[in-house]
Image (cartoon, rainbow, N blue to C red; front, side, top):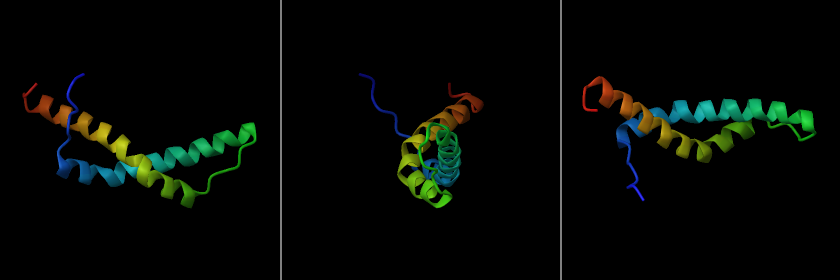
Length: 77
């Protein structure tokens, strides 16, 4: 099993608000779509509350991706 990569903390914290809000927007849009199958809609406030914990693993992946792009641009890869 490969070791778990750790993103830089400052980059992780700087990107979290943007990632969490992107998760909230996607949750809200998904909730609008699932009304077609009869499920209740998700309010924007509920989407914001749900994005707080769900944004953390997504932000982990985004931070690793951005760090890879930074490394590639600086010639470290």
